[in-house]
Image 1 (cartoon, rainbow, N blue to C red):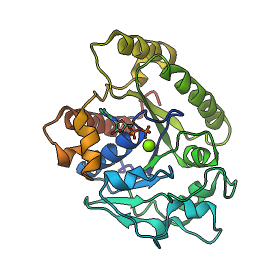
Image 2 (cartoon, rainbow, N blue to C red; image 1 turned 180 degrees about the vertical axis):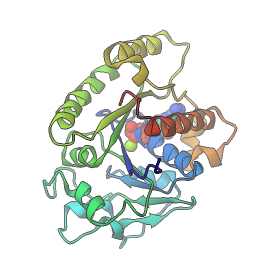
Image 3 (spheres, rainbow, N blue to C red; image 1 turned 30 degrees about the horizontal axis):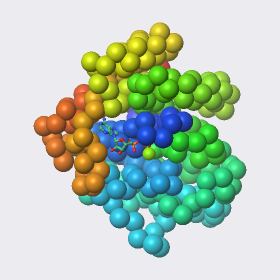
Image 4 (cartoon, rainbow, N blue to C red; image 1 turned 30 degrees about the vertical axis):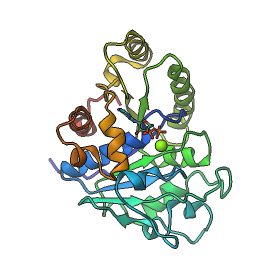
Length: 263
Ligand SMILES: Nc1ncnc2c1ncn2[C@@H]1O[C@H](COP(=O)(O)OP(=O)(O)O)[C@@H](O)[C@H]1O
Ligand SMILES: [Mg+2]
C-alpha cells in the first residue's frame, strides 16, 4: 500500500481566551517535529504569542500571515520563517492587525496553502486562532482538515465549546466537508477537582467519550517555557507538561493515521 501523503492541517480553536490554544499549538508543533514531521505553525491571533513560544522575534519589515487579508498580492510563503527548532517554521501574526478589518474572503488561507504548493513543503500545518468568531477564525476552519478544541474544565467553559461546535457543524456540513473533529482536550486540568471531572464527563456524554483526549495537566513550567521562548520538551523535558504533550503528540499522530478514528 502506498504511504499516506495527505497534508494534515490542524486548527486549534475555542471561543474563549485563556483556554490553552497557543500553549497547545506551540507544544504540539514541537512534538510533531520530534516525530519526524516538517511542521508549519500559522499564528492567526494578532496577539502574536506563537512567536514568543518558539523563540522567534519578527522584525518590523517582515511579512506576516495577516498580510494575506490586507493585500491581494501577499503570499503565505513570504511570511514563513524558520524557528530555533529544526523542522519547525512559523508564519507570524501581525500584532498591528485590526480584527474586523481586511478582506472578507473566508477561503483566502485555504487557497494560499493550495496555490503556493505548501503540501510539498510540509507534512503538517498547525493553525492557532483568535478567540473570536470572525473572518480569521473562519479562514482557519475552512483551511483545516482537523479541529482540536482545548478547554479548561470549568463550568463556564462548556457553553463556549457549545458555541464553537455550532459554528463547526455548519462549516463541516456546508463549506468544508473534509473537516473532522480531532478531539476535545482538557487543559490546565487538576484531575482531583470534582468540577473538572464533571465538565469532562459532560463533554464525553455530549460529544462521545472517544473524542475527549487525556488532559494536559496544570503545570507552571508550561507558562515559564513561554517566557523562555522554548517549547516544554526543550525547556523542562522531565516536567509533567512535557510528559503530557509527548503523550498527546503520539496519540494524535496515531489518530491522524487511523482511518477508523471517529473523526
Ligand atoms: N497546562 C497549563 N498549565 C499551566 N498554565 C498554563 C497551561 N496551559 C496554558 N497555561 C497558561 O495559561 C495562560 C493562557 O494560555 P494560552 O495558551 O495563552 O491560552 P489561549 O491561547 O487560549 O488564550 C498562559 O499564561 C499560559 O502560559
Ligand atoms: Mg492564544
